[in-house]
Length: 163
Image (tube, rainbow, N blue to C red; front, side, top):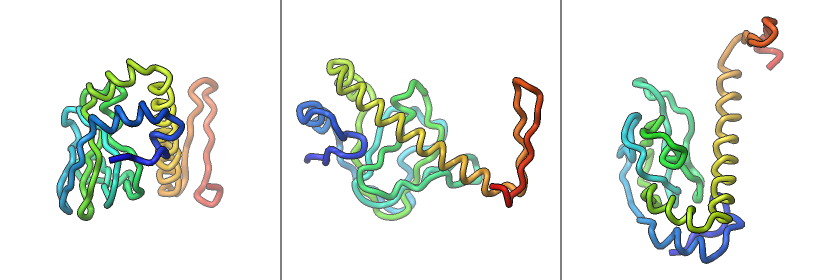
């Protein structure tokens, strides 16, 4: 199986991608199955092949993101030094994913530092984009927002119409 060099694997050498693909596992999951829950050991990294995966927080299961495009990565806690997952991942429909064991993936990245750096650059772009989306969701759900400036003790208040 060969993953197109886009999204997480864009601009990495074919040899690197081949090594990464050789240690991947393809899994299929049914609607309602959890790939991981908050607090589970963060040992796997995922890329969506087909389907939709809801990432949610808290006991109420507040949706923070839906992974819905082939090639999208999730389960990044496994690669960022976290011991446990910070969200739950539930399949919304029948879903197919690629899955990597974090130790195997990290070993490949350590032996090919140049491509490992590109990989982590892609991962940081992914996290940055999701963070901006989270900011947008949070700010649009607030009627007004108070933003203290911790360095100057000034407070900025905005209303929903200004957002």
